[in-house]
Image 1 (cartoon, rainbow, N blue to C red):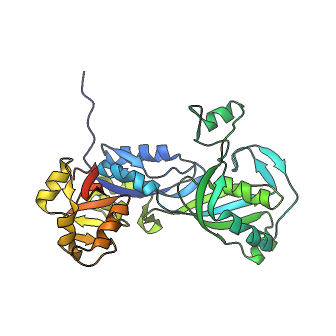
Image 2 (cartoon, rainbow, N blue to C red; image 1 turned 30 degrees about the horizontal axis):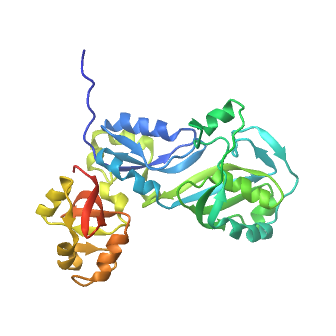
Length: 329
C-alpha cells in the first residue's frame, strides 16, 4: 500500500479575501490544494455569508494562530430593520416583524450601551457547544437551544449611514464595528434592534482586519491559484512572525536560542543587561532596567528571536524565559 504523500514545508501567512458563500473550512481546503502545504489552519472563522479578511496559516505559522484569533477585528456590517430571523442573518426564516424604524439619532443614543464589556447571547445557529453538541445542530433539529450570555468586548461602533441614505433606505443601517474575540455581529444586530423597540437581522458582513492583517495584505483564491509555484517568492506569503508584530521581542544569542529550542529555560537578566537592542517594544530603555523586567513578566507572550529567525513564543516565569511554542524554522 502506497504511503500518503507528505505536503510541502511552506511556512508563513496568507491573508485570503474570503468570497461570499464559502465556509472558512472550505477556504482552508482550497489553500491546501493550491499550495500543497503540509499544515494549514485559519486565524478566525467567518460565516459563509461574510466576506473579507481570513488569515490562513501555513506550516509553523499554525503555532501562532491563537495569538491572531485573540486579536482585534474590524467589521463593516449591514443591518436590516423590520424582520427577525432565526439565524439572525439573511439565511434564516422570518420569526417576527416590526413596523418600527429607528432614526439615526435614536441609534446614536443606543450605541454606547453596546461598547466596552458587553453581555451577549450567541445566535441559536452558532458553533457554541451545548452539552457537547454544536448549537446549530440542535437548532436544525428543532430542539430548544438555551445559550448562556458571555462577556465580549466591543471597542467601538461607528454609524456609516448618512441622514440622506437613511431617508432613501429607512430599512437599512451600516455600521463599522471594532471588536474582540468571540463577538457575534449577528447578535449585535439583534440586540441593538431590541434595545430600540424593533427587530432586525444582519444582511451583510465584511471583515476589514483581523489582528495585524488587513486588506492591504489580502489576496483572492483566484490570484493564489495564478501564483502557482512562485508563491514562496511572492509578497503574498507573509513571514510567520508577522502575526506577532505587536508583542515584545527578545534577541537571544545562538547558545540561548539552542537551549530554548530544546525546551530549556534561559535566564532573563543577562538578556536585559545586553541593553535595549536585546529587548524591543517592551517599555524599558536602560540595561538592567527593573521596570523592563517587570513588564516582560506581565506580558502574556513574548517572541524569542535569534537574529531574524523566530525561535519560540515564550513567557517569563520566575526570572526565566520559558518556551510556550517552539518553532522549527
